[in-house]
Image 1: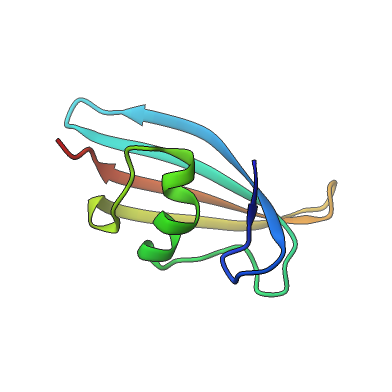
Image 2: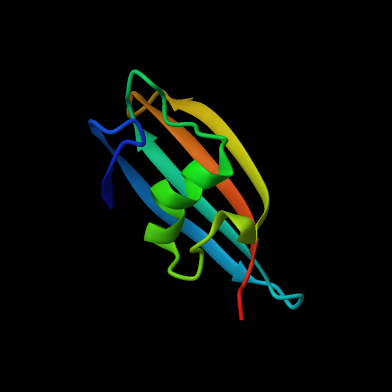
Length: 95
């Protein structure tokens, strides 16, 4: 889906690659953001990531306090000439 960039202007594409609910009640979520922007597409602040892409891709991820771990992998796709950032989010289901 096309979303507004976290900086407030321009847009990027976000894809939900994988979602796995583990037996311990944690959810492992893999999101991928693609596009080019002068501010980049990698954001490591948990609050910003949840508000920007987390709750748009997973309705159960509503609060940054649910997040146990956030890892990112930023790379260049030379075939499509765009930045790519994979977000790996581990969070607890509330309930």
